[in-house]
Amino acid sequence: MNFILKDENAVFYECGFSCDNVVFLKLGSEAFFITDARYTTEASECVKNATVLEGDRRDLLKTARLLIRKSGVKALCFNPSEWSVDAYARLSEKLSIHFQKKPNFSQEKRIIKTQGELEILRQAALFGRDAFTRFGEFLKRDGLGMDERMAHFEAESIFKYHGQLELSFSPIVALGENAAKPHALPSSKQLEKGELVLLDAGVKYRRYCSDRTRTSFFDEHFNFEKRQVFRDATQQKVYDTVLKAQEAAIKAVKVGVKACDVDKAAREVIDKAGYGDYFIHSTGHGVGLDIHELPVIGARSQTIIEENMVFTIEPGIYLPNAFGVRIEDTIIVTSSGAEVLG
Image (cartoon, rainbow, N blue to C red; front, side, top):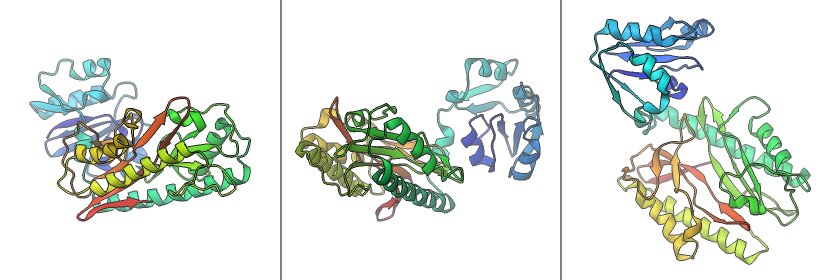
């Protein structure tokens, strides 16, 4: 397949290196990594299975067009979500070939992880789990009275291992009623004894992501373990329901089942408990070089689960202006079911 890429992670997957100004071309048996003078030295040292070419920093597509024209290819695949209207117009200008829209074709290639990728993902998950422990210890020691903004700042530092790792995404630290917002932004709300604390965070290790969420009760025994005891009966009921839903979905993961059936296993538990209207997102998503990859574990997903897929299981219940609970783990599909990471 002849194709062109601009997305950094998609390019990295093809040749082991990427940067913020690159066009990658696969034309027949040849591949080209086109970048500007700022990156050519490092690219020449790191790029595998592609020729590194230096192009105009402001118009790499000029070099790409010349290569496409010279190659004589009749069709070229591209992911339309990677391209602005302007960039696509400049790419296709005066090229009489067929540009084939193929959404997410790079993620489709990456949906089954190699053994090497799985080992990196396992290590990323271990780093993430350790950071959860260290952030939990920090909150237990120094968190009382701290607002979400400062807690978010501290979480970023801890999950970055003080600059040694990158973040999968900006951490979510949500207290009490703010946890009812699945992607809550940090506010001035302060952490008090007896507060519900939701933490959703992850790290990048060798570019691969970890992803995990815990919901906990803040007292002198505070931790991010899955078994939690809340003073409030409604919070305890909701928490136990979400945990049961996650366990049901993990148990449903098997080679050959549909992704929608994994979602259904979680959703049935939450529906039965009377909270179906408050589970407002899919049960999971793929994880790899991108924090959100294929497969989608949702009610409409017909994807057949295969061995060595990697995705999250993260049911949640969100009661507006009250509180929210989400429990998330990343899993690897094995021949016997699900391996929970971290």
